[in-house]
Length: 326
Image 1 (cartoon, rainbow, N blue to C red):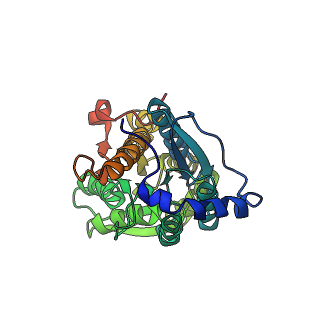
Image 2 (cartoon, helix red, strand yellow):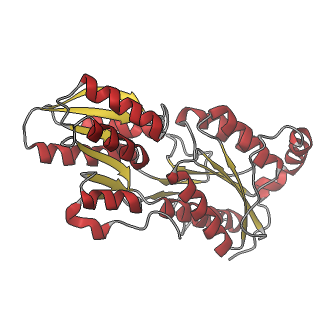
Image 3 (tube, one colour):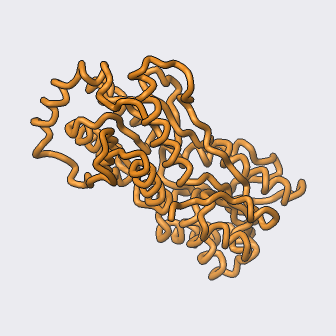
């Protein structure tokens, strides 16, 4: 690996970061934790929530950073855009070499990116990219609209032209959930009618309440799209308890538990977008892009990395990628 001394852009902003450190020393978010290694590259990872996906993403980031002798500071925004910005300010105060951000809301990214740019700290995004990537170091992108569309395509093929009713248990408004649900609804056939769409907030207990109300209001429901597998398991319990075992559920993530649920029939399909792959790609690309900036080499590292997607059904269980690092 090339020298990891701060880039010329970082050096120009060193005094600003030092001032920020003094100002922010006593007013951080209180949830920043130490890193996985004491390497010469320091990375600030701002995670979006505490779901299984986010836990696995953090593990992947820390393991890949350790393998590359990089120091990682991590913070969790707990699905709050204000906390996300505060966490980014804390990372700036630590004078990290780059930020990796799993945002809670794509609308919040404009402020996040501006804050990092003003401090001269490159920012790398996970899961989503912005329409204008000029001020962003790079991104490990999951095509969330495509994820939703893949589940919708499974329903289309399974329904085989029949008129069917569909329920949607979304996540938290903003960022991932809106893209997932939008892609799903746009790809449904005209014969599939969405009769209910409520947020489960990526919380299994909330999702179960939503599902209980949904099946009471729509006892003839045929399918349900649930924005992650943790919620999908709770939705399955609610439907089964209400005598709606025939409702077919499609979901997102491809966790080991999710793939097992597809195998035993609790879920009909799920789209695997490996948290391990996202985290590993983010760290590899961030370190490599920093090296590339310092060497003025414009070749060799992709600014945007597309994460592979797999629709997992009973017919291709073995094709599901590893979701969470061991």
